Image 1 (cartoon, rainbow, N blue to C red):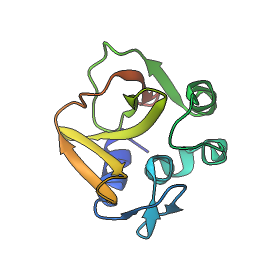
Image 2 (image 1 turned 90 degrees about the vertical axis):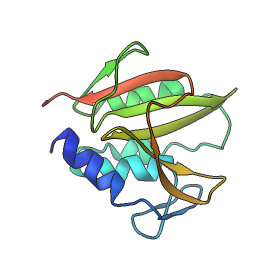
Image 3 (image 1 turned 180 degrees about the horizontal axis):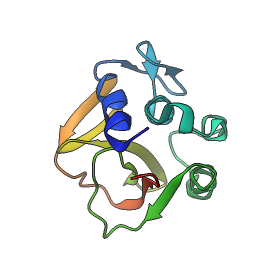
Length: 135
């Protein structure tokens, strides 16, 4: 697996319906479901078992799940590259996972009701960035 493959798997889901706790690629995904699908065999199933709501502090649980996967964590001063997984905070006590792809990011957009691609770097505060160790 490579960062490019992670990104390609996320890009392939653009247009998939958004559903909270959605885990079926091509049918319905939330941000966790999108990341689990993009990571394929590297995904830690514990990430999908986090009992979360749209708002809450799940940072430690997300970080623990990524520590069990072959990823290195970087801080907010790191420039994302293809296949990086970003944890951002769009609002107070709201966390959101994104997949960086090409010159933008893929994410499950609740308000638009689908997985979308947004060009550029997310404007939301970056909490963590995970990059596959093999690259």
